[in-house]
Image 1: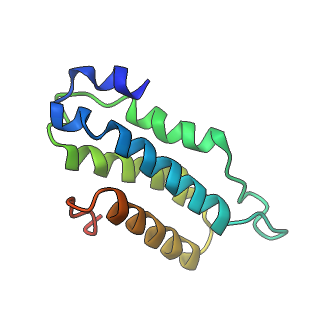
Image 2: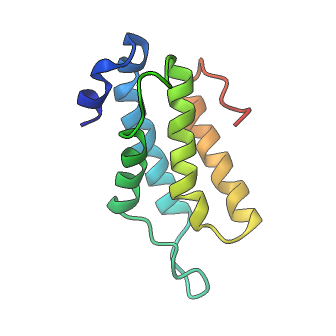
Amino acid sequence: FLDGHLQNFTDEIKGQSTNLIKAALGLHSLVSSTFRKTATNFHYEFNIRHISNVFQGLLVSSPKHFQSAEKFTLLWLHESERVYGDRLVSIEDLSKYNALAQSQCKKVFPSFPTAKY
């Protein structure tokens, strides 16, 4: 689905499709294993629906608004925070999530300066 959606985008963005999928799956795995469901955080249950919501946000993007792969990667970061970060209830958990997201970005997108996000 992502490759089909990115057909009208720049070649730079099209080339990031595999990396975006790898980054999204990696972040989902990290979030699922780090934030476990407990009695006080019973809503910390992350499943396939959550990762599909990240891609749903990416699939409504428009080529006229995204000309560079860096900006599209920032959209992925935003959508991920919207899906995962919005469910977290404490400042500590949100800080931990941000560290996980940044580490995933450095691993998959080392040339993009995503730390500002």
